[in-house]
Image (cartoon, rainbow, N blue to C red; front, top):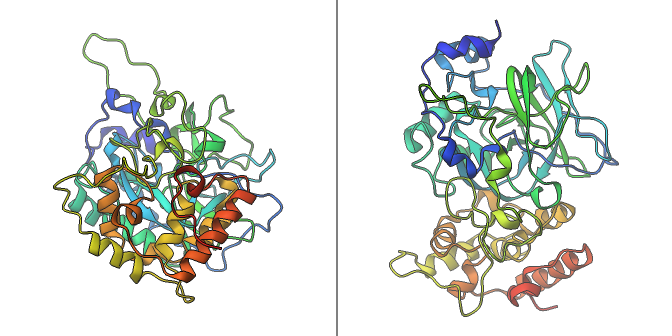
Length: 432
């Protein structure tokens, strides 16, 4: 009997997944990742990774401590859209496409000799919008505090960074001996796409919130992911479920809802319904057609998953939003690099139009922002449903060093084949 089968009799802490809600995200929870440059040196952890807290396999394999009836936290189970709590910050890792060693990038997930873990090559994201599956938090105390704040299903934490787990990821405190942690984001969706292949029970790597090493020069990181044996879904279409004797997919499982009495079981979940037919296709969402997990759009997420950019003369602060522009501008001014550059403003100039090939620019523009207080900025962008727009809406001042740095970053994006926000709406262009 597999651990998956044992869990079928255990009472879940969260509610069952509503199939009608699946159209928002079900295919996005496969312990997230994206391709990188194979030419870089593969990172190797210098210390033994701590895979979970408490650091005891017996604790996590005890059904009394499972987060759902389908298995432990490292099974990466998604029961309903609200299980994905939204966050903003970084750095974090993406392992969404990890598994195979073939292709132009080495995205392999290689099993350890005992088969309990997989070393997965994943993509380093310096900063951005991301999601954590509340059922897959590998630190029990952080899981408990997140459930206390957000509810067992995560529904009370629809605002980015309102879940305690977000701060743990941003501050790098989720687990010791780790430089960053694996989450899910849309950062590579505009170029790499999203899909689903349903697979029968077999070992897979549950990478959500797994510990990762420092990134290498090519922007790749190695994450040490616990392995679970059960049915799973791969986040791409038409994939072979079995990769080889020492390779497994970074994957997760969104179970179908139980059929009603006398009704045939529903077909397998199709996660491609989670995005609109034309999304994600290009950097910078100017239409807001595709919703993010949950409802509405996600400020600062890339591609069609994100909210629209600022539209001069059209985007406004909604009445009674409670936003204080003085506080918004103070947050931009308070978070600066050693040179005096206002990090929130340089980040806004690049973040919402970035692609996988300019992640180094985003890393430079957003350096250290994950540890800054941007709560009022987030409040404004959520209220106005726009991305990288708070400084424009509040007319926040930009100092000369920041203005010059923005101009450099904007040109660097153009040189990388990325259309910057400046060329879309004429804002955050900087002065050379």
